[in-house]
Amino acid sequence: MKTLFGRLARLGLIATATLTATAALADPVKIRIGWATMPGHMIPVLYSNPSILKHYGKSYVVEPILFRGSTPQITAMAAGEIDMGAFSATSLALAATNAGLDVKVVADIIQDGVDGHHSDAFLVKADSPIKTVEDLKGKRIATNAIGSASDTGMRVMLLNKGMVDKRDFTSIEVAFPNIPAMIEEDKVDMGPVLQPMYGKLVKSGKYRKLFSVSDAVGPSELVFLAARADFLAKNKQAVQDFFEDHVTAIRWFMDPKNKQAGSEIIGKFMKQPPENFAYMFTKEDYFRDPYMVPNVKNIQTMVDASVKAGALPAAFQVAPKYADLTFIEEAKKRVQANEGKTQ
Figure 1 (cartoon, rainbow, N blue to C red):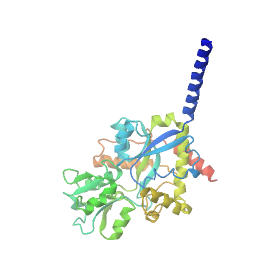
Figure 2 (cartoon, rainbow, N blue to C red):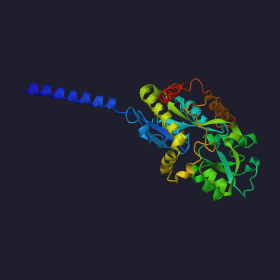
Figure 3 (cartoon, one colour):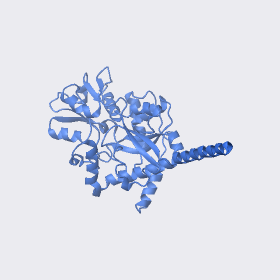
Figure 4 (cartoon, rainbow, N blue to C red):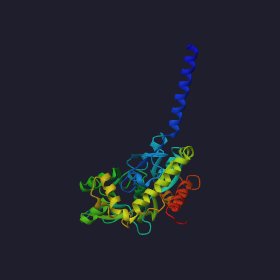
């Protein structure tokens, strides 16, 4: 009898283990994504309308994780704390060369100064004696994170005028939301201010734009989604489903008929009135590829600018080793098929 009970117990343990393993296999893959600014990056709100997403909660779920800028996400990715991140060109190069990560450009997030669209701007007080870039010599400049996209634009602009950090000016790292107050309180003389605050401050007449990122480097792929190659390889189907939903979601927000609903979602997250985001997806906003396909050529442009600015010690080639557009291209095909369009 004891032998029979023993066999049954073992069978029970085996059955439990099998069920547990099956349940684990059925669990959706958690995709941890770094982001730094809203509403520019959009990552925290893209999955807030499950009714339009085919795969969310089934094959994957998303955990958005906030960072000060793109460069701090390198450390997090190296530590296995995020699977994808909102990277600048400099961040990509540093992740590959300094951190030794096999990281791939996988999707667009925002592009700067493309086709007449908004470019990140650096503001000074309207009554500031700083009238030209040359006047920044000896001044204090806010930057959200060393090596970020806006930081690179600032350094290239000043380098073009013969100025470098520590010798000719002082850069101070400040989180984006705190930069306007730092300028107002004369704690810094200039800093990058993002939409929607940028539009408000300029319209108030108390601030003026000194220059923009596009003035320094031309049109650029400002921020893009980058992912660890091992995560992509391990979770191919879930990642493909994610990108199909990712493109579907951004296109939902881009659709003029969803303007009010989209603004309300963004406003709720930002704890601001929806009307503050009327500029979204217009020329006053960044350019976003309609199917989130990144402009790898313009990423290379920013890498080269970073080398010139001294943010990168040596040349770095993005494609083909550090770009994988297979997921986003397939997502584009799927979404176009769903929309009844032809490529």
